Structures are given as C-alpha cells and as structure tokens.
Amino acid sequence: MSAFLALIRAAFRREAEHRSRNIIRILGGLVEILARISIWQAAFGAHPSLYGITLSQMITYALIGGTVLSSWDATMIVRDVGATIRTGAIGSSLLRPVGYPLMLLAEQLGVRFFDWLLVSAPVIVIMGLIYGIEPPASLGHALLFLGHVVVSLAILMTTAILIGLLSFWVFDAHSLEWFMRGLLAVLSGGLVPIWFFPSGFAQVAHALPFSWITYQPMAVYLGERDLAASALSLAAGSGWAVVLGLGVAFVWSRACGQVVVQGG
Image (cartoon, rainbow, N blue to C red; front, side):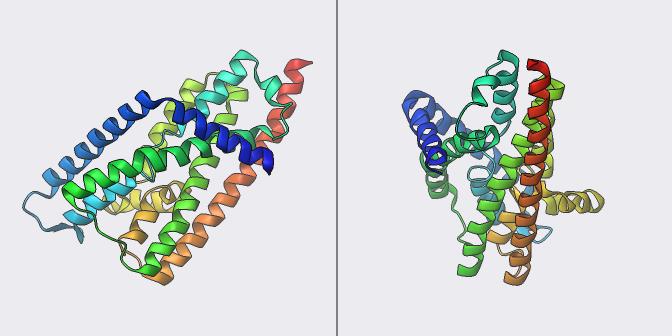
C-alpha cells in the first residue's frame, strides 16, 4: 500500500511541475465549457425545457460533467501501455514492487487528483460565477453523487487499463486509443446526456457500464432519480466496477504469458 500511495504522490508532483501547461489546460477547459454551454443555449432557444430538462440543469451538467467526470483523457493510459510495449520498457515495469495494472492505476490517480484540484475546480468556479450552477437536489443526492464519482473513476480507469492491455496482442495502440475515445464520448453521456438519445439507443447505453462515467452521476446530482433509485444505481455501478476489475486481472494474467513467450 505504501508503494501504491508513493506512486500517486509522485504522479501528482510531476503534474504540478508543469505550470505553464496547467495554465493552458485551465484556459482550454474554460473554452470547452463555454462551447458546451453555448451549444445548449442554442439548442434550447426560447424553450424553457426539453424532455423535462431545463437549460439551468444542462449548464450544470456541462459544468460538472464536462470537468469532474469527463475532462480527463483516459486514453493516455492506452497510449502509455502501447509505448511501454513498443519500446520494451514493459520488462522493467514487471520488476517493480507494484503490479503493472496497479502501477498504471496509481499513476493515473495522481494525475486525476491533480486535475480535479487545480484544473477542474478553477473552471467550475469561474464558469459557475458567470452562468450559475445548481446545487445537488438534496443532501442525500449529494452523498450518493460522491459515491457515483468514485464509481465513475473506477469504471473509467479499469476500462482504460483493460483496453490498454489489449496492446499486447494488437501492438498498434493508436487504433485502440481512437476506439476508446469514440466509445466513451458517446456511451458515457459526456457529450450528450442519454435522456436525449433515441429510445432504442438509450436502452443499450443504460445497459452498459460506460453510462456510470458521466450520465448516471449527473442524473443523481440533478435529482432526476429519487434516493432509492439513486442507491440502486450506485450498487449497479459498483458491480460493474468489480466486473471490469476482474476483467483487468484476467487479461493481465494472459498478457504476462504473452511477455514470457516473446522474451523466451
């Protein structure tokens, strides 16, 4: 555990060293959220609500969903795994005291925590002061939302690690990277909430774990579900996180055999 925490702290400190890059990331985040809000303002026009969702709710969805839940580029895990395999650095990674998937998780947790504190938070504060932001529907919804944020992070990272580990067989991580980016952009509800999807497509999206990355947490935050349904959603998302974690463990066990074959 101490080695795991040390990797998180090291990744956090590395991110803090790039001050100019982080300023640019904040500016980029402001521009992205401004674009999202402008699109929704144009989509609503003079209508007070669409499908029972108000413009104020969609601004809040864009602010929180576009920063806390979906601003981080999880495909960097796929990119890093592909580069590690391509350069042969995977051999030294296997010698570390922390297993390779856990090492990836720890390093990206450090990056994500930094992003939340020093990139996402300033963007939310600035844009919230300009456009306004709705509070959680209730204290209970706020607590369940925090639980959903943890589940969102777990599903996002285990999905990225799982797809990244496929690089042991695909070798070209670029195709996996683009596949994951497109998959998550649509099915997570990060760009368009699932309640705006056609009914058949919405049913498919609800049945997959990716909706717990952005859509499900924001539906809870905005009170689109009552507390009982929100609690069930949290339990279902936790189950998906466990399933994906087991999938990572299985694929990694197979990948270790692949490394032995190639090295032997």
